Amino acid sequence: MKRLLITLLMCSALIPAIAQQNIATNHFTAGLNGAFYGSGDIIGPALYIAYTRQFSPYLGIAPRLQTGYANSLTNYAFDHASSLMAFADIEITPLPNRLNRFSLLLGGVYHHFIKVYGNYQRISEYEEYLSNNATYRNDKCFGLHGALKYRIVNTEKYQVGIIAELMTGFYEGYLEAESLQCGLFFTINH
Image (cartoon, rainbow, N blue to C red; front, side, top):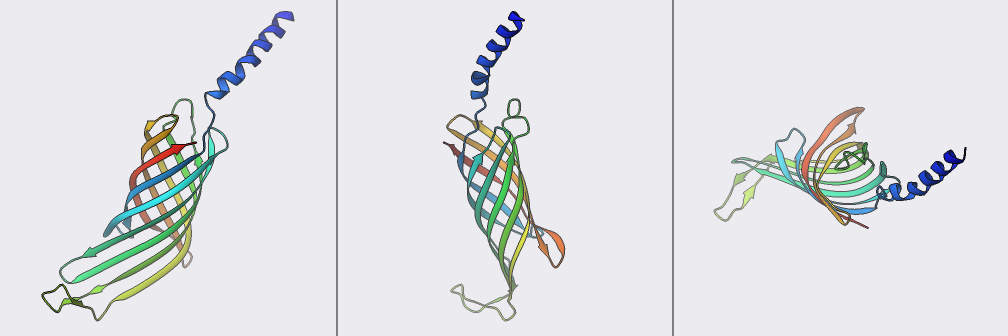
């Protein structure tokens, strides 16, 4: 009995030392993605900022704001898309001791999307154009968001990594893919 008590006391004294190796940190993140909007026919950059509040090495919440745009101009057609998104995600690191470079983001997104497209004709040599049939679309919707993050550099003070994500939106009772994005992120831990 005495041996068991001494062993338990020694183990309990080691728990704080072991636990401190896995203390989760809160962090600020900035990122740059390449965004494929709709069917992928227009591609453009997307910038975002996020703050992640870690509750444990496994789980955190990660609100985020993002903006992006895309332009396409061919011989007789134009296409422009702009978006503003607000995310409410849960960040999950399934195996923080073995695979701490990987994490998964799951949550919801509010998406304000503006798209203008149509045909045009050039009316002068000074880059002036005329369009008689432009179509304007202004959508606001809620959707789902999923992302996979991989940290290439993972130190106590900062992280640099890549992210792949999918955003969806609910339109007229249907869930549609809105945007597929891949990019880089930089994180500062505090």
